[in-house]
Length: 289
Image (cartoon, rainbow, N blue to C red; front, side, top):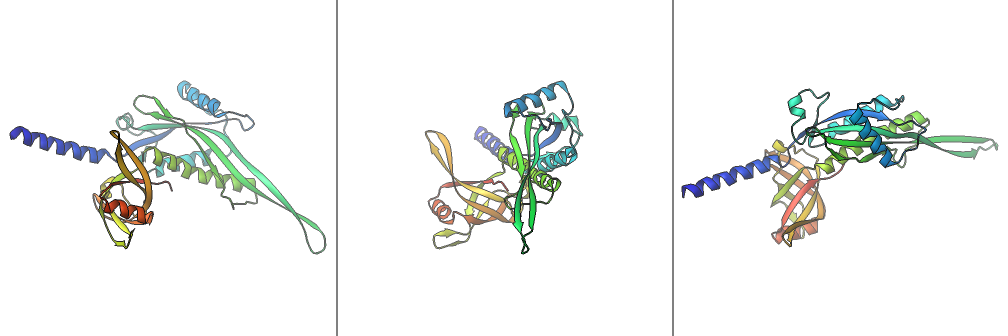
């Protein structure tokens, strides 16, 4: 009985540790930032090779541009906005940096440009007037490296583009608009790489065959906040393996404790209610913004 009690307590501690590490936060920092020549055409593979080479040799920027600080600031904003990362500016504590799971990001800016379009119209006197507007684009190849081992984890290409209706009177304004969008793409990538995860623990309000609310085991201790959008997944075991399929979305309406939040169902209300009524296991995972 004593052995059984010890094993039970040990398993409980393991379960607590697993729950605590589920949404663990890691440190992330920006390393080398390089710029390709604006007139140099470069494939994605060449860009990856160049930034890895730069990281290994310690070489500085290939070429700086007048947008250097704007692009760097946008990348830092994206790193800082990711749910499960703390941006560590300048690697303040070596011990914090080398801990397993922490990441150093190098960046190679491969494209900064503005494209223009013009329209010629005639006024009532027959005089022609030309209107020109611009749209911006910026692209970068990121190299994510494990801070402890130096191993390259991934090389995603991220970009920022003006929205479909964005039209600017100057190329500068168009490019700065694209740079602003770059931040969101950086944070979205990191949020997909390490999303916030939780389990549905109880159904809430419902109306007929539609689920209106539900509760998840995610609270203030793991970074939950009001307004966080999450995808809902149905989890099944197939041939001893876990498979999941997306059936809806929810948004946290209220953080009600360290490990509980109330969510509003924003899509898939029928499928979610049917799954809950059937006693199926449901999980949630943070969605891109």
